[in-house]
Image 1 (cartoon, rainbow over the protein chains, first blue to last red):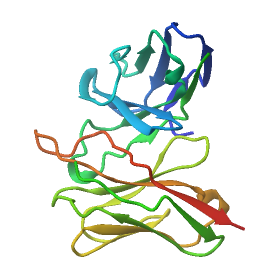
Image 2: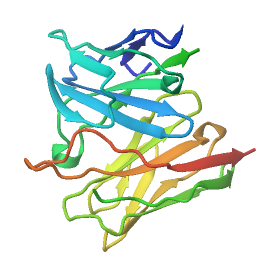
Image 3: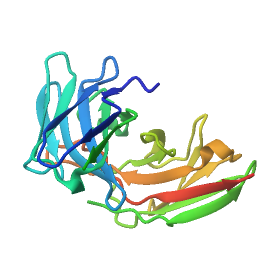
Length: 117
Length: 115
């Protein structure tokens, strides 16, 4: 158990639907990151939050949005789902928002597997 | 962003040392070198990181070339549990100083360990 909790573990839904993935970071970590992993794209960085504020944005589609709440948990909302959105979605957390000093290790959760039919 | 180049795959025998290479010829002076690995059906996990000097921890050793254009992750005695994809990652500087927090993953090296 890494200390990063992701729910649900598995989710099956239909095209056009909307889902919400939830992430609770490791105790004490202020930064949350979302990654998407599909077979053909590898691990793609989506977005990062630090203490409630968006810190960095990667290849996140406009149909996707995220937020980090005051209790530091984060949610990734995926809407108008397409077949190509089927993937593993990982959440990670770290103590800080930057890699200052070279450390700021990211701890990943076990992932949420989304299947869009 | 500085990029890394790793072999697509490597094979090792159980209980033998494994040397996983990474080339990063465009590394800047303040980029840290990070290694993560992803076991099958799991999220990535941190292995080790370093700047200039060689580093050791309970999982592995990191050997960094003197010119920093390459590095090698060393698993001293591979076990079946070490079969994973290993990612070598450089942390890029932001405009505001300090390295960015997020990690940009490449394709990594898929390590197979034979009993």
